[in-house]
Image (cartoon, rainbow, N blue to C red; front, top):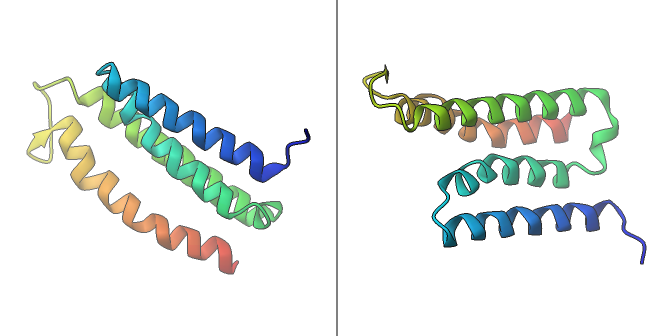
Length: 117
């Protein structure tokens, strides 16, 4: 059986969902938390399978992916620290409210820019 690009993406998505399920069943919050940006990144790449050959699309999507993962790692590392604050909240909550929420709102705009470029 020969796998094409779409089959590989679907298998990656299934693996991410299995990791999420294991995290939920065994109460491992990191497996659920860190797979959220991975899933959004893989879905954006899935939507861009034809457009990814263009340099602008590849650079934009790659930079957005790196920023998203970096911010989620920052929020995850601040999730357990209650002594530091960010914007009046604990670091994890502050990063979610002030950075991740707007970043995920802009993700639709990033997708539109890539499609129209």
